[in-house]
Length: 451
Image (cartoon, rainbow, N blue to C red; front, side):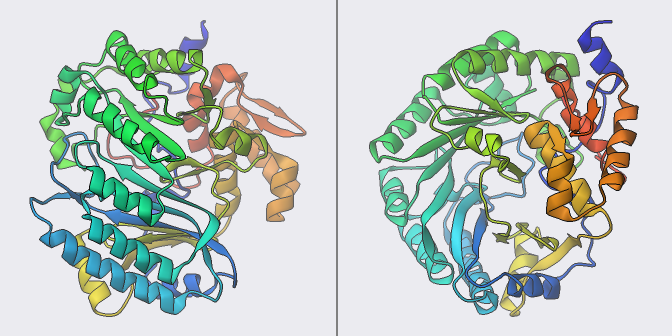
């Protein structure tokens, strides 16, 4: 039996598994967590700590069919201006709760399309954030940039605000694929924005592409990757498209019959992977590729690599505050999430309280399982000594858990006194193996297979 057939036996092509950008996953969040929990966890941040902030801007000029995020279309800036006023009110609530001396590790604007903001909006929002949480000397400020919704004045405003990292969604450069997913974005437009960013001495440019889209073939995705490589990005995220039309209604515009099979998805991933590695990029975790100047390889070597809602990161902060509708916060105590609908979010904030609608407080063996899953997703290995030291847990309890999972994948994983390791030939199954450590029932409600 060849290795692919062996991996298929364990669910390579048909397992429904999360991406494990958090543990527990958002499917386990409940309304038992509310505004009071969020406030208490903010107030529990130690004085002088560094935290990170994610700001969600859920507006777009166009609604791409493939996107499963909470976004809404707008043709003018009035809803955006009103929303930013609510954002500022939420930041005021945060300011009242934050302990003294807290500074900013990372600032990330996502969406939606954050580059819809006008130059004055960019300046106003950044100044408000800086007044609440001052930038540290090494703060990284990242913004998701849509090449079809940006111009020189907005780039200049972002630069003046302190932008250091640009994140550009590409998905695919093939016109047939772009038409099928409702996102027309030419290579020329993308290249020009990258050139403008480089001209402004942006330290870091990362890009994201998708495999598993309609009409993709190994030849087509290889051509897109070659175009992408000509841009010389510092980091590349190669994500699998998740087709969940039951959750993201706009995906109903993409016929399921046009999508590649799981076996074809794997071929697409491997075609892209081969080109990226051949061009000198180091693979980090299951879906990131980094150039020599990127910080993720060093973070992986030193055991500092993490996986978050924004992908892999070397952010050392243990608190992430999510600002805006649907934004998720992460604390040492657990997770909180704001109301997803902008109306409900705004109503809560305008009533003078946080918009926390649901979340999860760590309990039982959550932290142990979270660290095991994080270690597998980042390093493909679980070090028993490190976990026992960091979490003050029983070595015997951890070994029993590792042995139980290893027994579910006979002759596939390496289990010894050091811990558990996923060999190179089995790393395509990393998410499936991680799911075996998930202490909660996993209901994916759609097709979220590894490939």
